[in-house]
Amino acid sequence: MATSPHPVILAPSLLGGNHTAFGESLQLVSETRLEWVHLDIMDGHFVPNLSFGPQLVSDLRTQSDLFFDVHLMLDNPHAHLDAFIQAGADQITIHLEPDYPVKATLERIKAAGKRCGIALNPNTPAEAAEPFLALCDIVVVMTVEPGFGGQSFREDVLPKMETLSRWREEKAYAYRLQADGGVTTETAPACLSRGIDTLVAGTAFFKSADKEAFAQAIIAQ
Ligand code: DX5
Ligand code: ZN
Image (cartoon, rainbow, N blue to C red; front, side):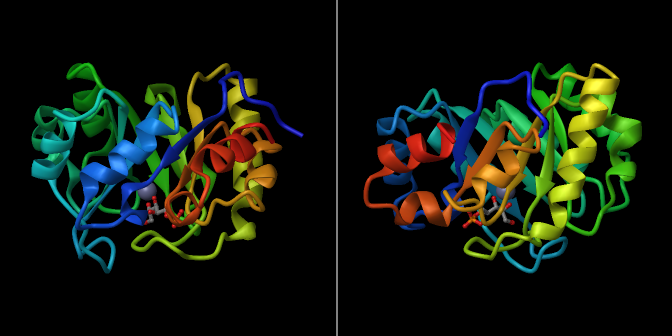
């Protein structure tokens, strides 16, 4: 059993909403009195899917003061950083797997006054994150292979949560720990008991008939 120093947050992913009505999806998040919204940016290279870009983030920014948690699933996040900073991201997470200057990119996000973090695919070991943890406001533990919503939660990733929780405690790191992918009321408890404090839910949130009840069921686990 690992605990987090941070209050539990649920961040609905707009990828799971109706793509003809992102503003309405954003409104649904606001009405559920949640604080964060998760924005999945996909390039069709690093992940086999395309989603949306900085213009959408910028337009949504004018409609909401929610915390914009922008997840860059890009081969070259450093090349698009300014666009998402300008668009109004509050936090930007970048993947460790592509070959680009990760540390310098994290530092650029921080220098712009935004929160920064790294994301690890299911098969990427926690050890890959070690050089960057001191810089991170958040570490994203992908619990699905990135690229699509609606996938099944991967239990094989649970030990990685335990490792990152332990390191956070042992080394007095301040990062939040986020689970991203396949999060439901069934899979959330296993994450929370391992020190996850930030849960992303796309499909489960937008499919739920009572979003307030869903959010409470996830957070109050
Ligand atoms: C997957 C994305 C996730 C996904 C979550 O690549 O990073 O944020 O949208 O959606 P669900 O909750 O449907 O797995
Ligand atoms: Zn995501």
